[in-house]
Image 1 (cartoon, rainbow, N blue to C red):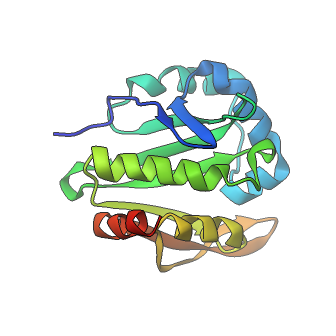
Image 2: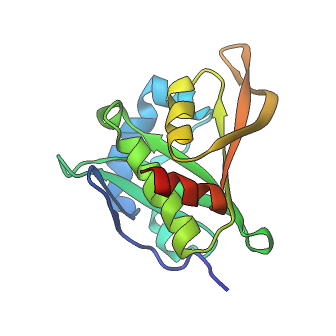
Length: 186
């Protein structure tokens, strides 16, 4: 049975996705410290530096998820992470999440990283379905996901409370047959 024990390096025109490790801590911490990134990811709560470093040290050992650093090919800098998690082997599905810090935004890096990891999940791992949630105040991300073949399925109403206001989470997914259509359009 396929699992996530192999940690690949995936290369595109703009980004390299490689296994996440503790050396990526400073870049990801800087991204998470950005108030806008925190809002876009709905991140509440704090994690200590040691907890974060310990978590990052164990990413390569996980057989039920894939955590890859997003490296900007133009600068060599880590600008974020792309993750396949919440693996359901019986249903050949998982969740996808991505984080891009300010230095990697607005240049197509997230769109390419999404396409690379989704392609790996469907074409190599044999996943049938990859899903995600995107908050209603983030239409830019929703458009990027649509470019990678994700389709809106529904809405989780009032899924996030941020600064005293409630926001919906838009549920999106891409299925293996749809991914093949995205490839033929590219």
